[in-house]
Each structure stands twice: as structure tokens, then as C-alpha cells.
Length: 118
Ligand code: 5GP
Image (tube, rainbow, N blue to C red; front, side):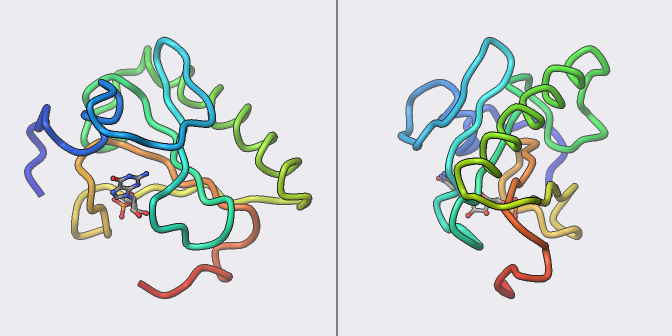
């Protein structure tokens, strides 16, 4: 995967409003929407709006905003799905399984072991 940021990747286009998504939360710096191919019901994605392919490219001053959104959306997800726990994970680079080259965190209600195999 090219670690140079492609401004026309799918998630950049969703952030700009050029492609549709089922948004569940948005503020100046972050966006959360439903995954188009959920691994389990309620599968969400949380993104920083700043251009970054991997977590290692995320500017330090953007990290707290993303974490705040993960906490907010994750708690709401657990409540909405009526579960007592959820999982947060992300992939860095295609070797790790990343398919969309804009940093994103997966939030799923429940344990990772319940996920479908790719
Ligand atoms: P990755 O494998 O890169 O960590 O995860 C990418 C995720 O983005 C996958 O779970 C995939 O289903 C989701 N995805 C890919 N394209 C789209 C899209 O156009 N819209 C939405 N909402 N999700 C997408």
C-alpha cells in the first residue's frame, strides 16, 4: 500500500460529502459511519479527518480528538446494541489487512472472535 496519502480515496470522498455514508457522528475533526460490509450488526468506523494512511502518520495533536470520538461513539454503540462490551481495532498497511488508505478504527459490539473470517 502506498503510504503517500491519496486525496481521492473512498473515505476522503465520504469526508468531503462526495460519496454517501450512514453517518452516526461528526464533528470538526472526526467522522463515524456504518461499515458498508459489517462484520457483525452495529459495525462502525471512526476516522480522523486529517489526511493519514496509518496510525503512525496521525499527528499527535489529532490523536486526542479521535480517541474522544471513539469513546463517545463506542459507549453509544454498546448502549444501542444492548451489550456490555465492544472491540476497537485498526490495520496499518495492506500487510496488516488495511484495504482503504485513510486511517480508520473499527468499532464492533462484542468480541473480535465473533467476527466473520474475511
Ligand atoms: P480495513 O480492512 O481497511 O481495515 O477496513 C476497511 C473497511 O471499510 C471494511 O470493513 C469495509 O467494509 C469498509 N468499507 C469499504 N468501502 C466502504 C465504503 O464505501 N463505505 C463504507 N461505509 N464502508 C466501506
